[in-house]
Image (tube, rainbow over the protein chains, first blue to last red):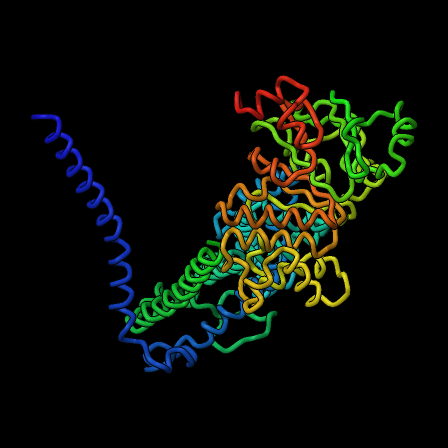
Length: 281
Length: 281
C-alpha cells in the first residue's frame, strides 16, 4: 500500500472509531432521558405540581410539598453556603498563594470528594441528635456542606481568570488592594461566580443521600425549619422502593420534574457563562 | 558617564553629582529641582538581579525615554518608580528613589498614596470591562471617593487625551466597544483623572497601529506641558520623536543617559552607539 493511501486509511479508521465512541457514550444519556420522559410524562399535570401526595390507591395527588421543600432547603443551604463558599473562593484567589491558602484548597478538594451520604451522617450527628428531631435545618446544613467546597473552588477559578492587567490598572490609580478586589475584580468575575452558584444549587437540588436522615420526609406542607420536610429526591426514593405500581409511576413523574428543574438551572448557568465570555471577548 | 555640564539647561536632567552642585548653581542659577531622583537603584526578581545601581534624575515637565533590548531592565525600572514591582512575587528594590526630594521606597511610604501621584499607562489597553467609558475615566475618583464635578473632570481629561470628540456621544457605552487605540487613550484619560504629577508609560503604543501610535505621540507632546513623563519604548524612532532625554539600559545597567539628540547622534558609550545604530538589539 502506498503511503498516501495508508494515511487516508488511518484517518478514516480513527474518525470512525472516535465517532463510534461518541455514539456509545451518548446511548446511556439518551436512554436515560427517554426512560424518564416516557414513563414520567403521562403523570404530568398541573395538579401534580401543586397537590399533596395521596395514599396508595387514591387517584390524583402530587409532589407540591416536595417541590416547595426542595426549594426551601436549597434556599436555607444557599444562605449558609454562599457567603462562606464565595468568600473562601475570593480569599483563595486573592491571598491563597501561601501555606494557609494551600491548606484551605487541599481541604476543599478533600471535602468535595467526600461521599454525600457521609455528609448526611455528619449533619445527623451535628444537628439531628442535638435537636432530637429530623428537620429542614439539618437538611439545609447537609446541603450547605456539599455546596461550600465546590463553590469555593469554582469562585476561585473564575476570579483567577480576571486578567492581571485589570488589577494593575486599578492599583496604579492609587486604589487600595481590598477595594480593587471588591470593586474591580469581583464585578468582572461576577458572571462566572453566578454560574458557579447556579451549578452548586443544581447539584444540591439533586442530592438524596444527605437528606435521607436529616430532613427525612413529610406528607404535608412545611416551611418550619425545625420540622421534617419533604424533598423531591427523597420523595422519588420513597415512591420507587414502595411495592405499589401507582407510586412507581409517580416516582417517574417526580424524577422528570427534578430533571427539568436541574436542567433549567444548568441551562441558565451555561447561558450566563456564554454571555460572560462574549462580554470579556 | 556623560558630562552634562554643557547641555544642562533649566529643563535638563543631569547626572547626580553632589560635589559639583555648587558649581552648577553658579553656572545656571535657575536649575530646576529634579522631579524624580534615582540613586543606586538595584532590583531583583528572586535571585536574578534585574537592575544594577541605576543613577539618574528626571526634570519636571519633561519626557524621559527608557530604551534598550528586551530584558534590559527598563520596564523593571519603570515599575519601581511607583512600586508596581511589589506586585510580582519575589521582586524587591533597593536604593534611593526621590519624588520631589522625598523617599518613595521607605517602609513607611504607603504605595497607594504614591500611586496617586505617579500614574501608569500599560503596554496593552486595560479598560475596566464592566464599566462604561465615563465610569472608566472616573474610576480612580469614584473608587478613591474623590469629590468634585466628575462629569467636568471626565470631559477635561478626555479632551486632554484627545478622545473627547470620538466618544462624547457614547459615554455610557461599554469601554470594550472602543477600538484598541481609543481604549489606550481612554486609559491615559483614566490615569490623568486622578491628577498625578508623574505619568509612567510602559510601551504605550506597542499594541497599536501607526495612526493610533501617532495620536499617542502627539498626546505625549501636549501632556509634558503639565506632567513629568517617563516612557519605556522598544521603538527608537519613537524615543527620538517624543523624549527630551533618553536613558539606555543594557543587561540591567544604565549605560548612558542624556539629551535625546546626543544619545542618538553622539553617544559617549560604544554600546549605546551600537544599539541606536542597529548593530544589535
